[in-house]
Length: 174
Ligand code: HEM
Ligand code: HEM
Image (cartoon, rainbow, N blue to C red; front, top):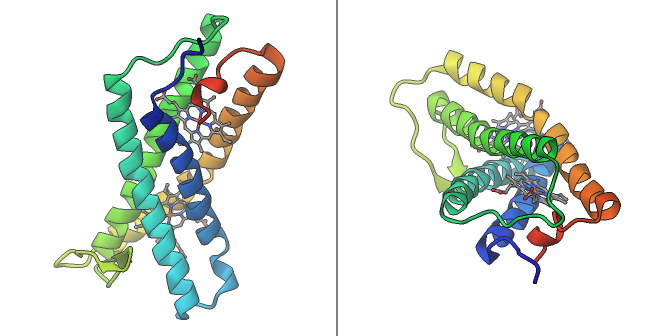
């Protein structure tokens, strides 16, 4: 019988994919709405809220991962393939926890009104615009790395499925 990831892990994996599409799409397309309009504000709040959710889900996934054994691939992978996949997974976890954390901290230090899911969020008593803009610059520099990592990760999954014909992808399909 096929050894699969736990249902919760499969659910969170694909929910992350959906939320990342929303987070990237809203911010990349923000130029379609003028600054100050409700449409632009809605795009920003959606970006913040989807990004925040990604961070919480990635933390939950790390917890689940520590509690469950990763299902083996059949036929077994070469050592370099396992090593490379672990490296890419580690970078994905790190990026999608650090990236939202930078965004959230920057909004907090900027100390202007902002919200998640329409709820006003706390802000620093004393604004620190210099650190806030340094953190958001770092956020904007690191964000495109996600495209490369996800691209590499998804291509590897397809390569395993269609060329190596192993169970890598089927283990994480709903
Ligand atoms: C997985 C989570 C996230 C991803 C993938 C992500 C990705 C991005 C990308 C691609 C950009 C645009 C870069 C550019 O145009 O040069 C951006 C900008 C930005 N992000 Fe995020 N982000 C995430 C989470 C967050 C969170 C949680 C916040 C704050 C609560 C946030 C706040 C911002 C801000 C303020 C900008 C600059 C917008 C502007 O200058 O108009 N991001 N982000
Ligand atoms: C269409 C896109 C995607 C496909 C086809 C895909 C496929 C897969 C496959 C086959 C695995 C199992 C790999 C293994 O156990 O060696 C996996 C695991 C994983 N995927 Fe994706 N994935 C996609 C998108 C994403 C995205 C956007 C993220 C961003 C966070 C992501 C993060 C992860 C992580 C962190 C793991 C490791 C799970 C663990 O063992 O803890 N994936 N994915």
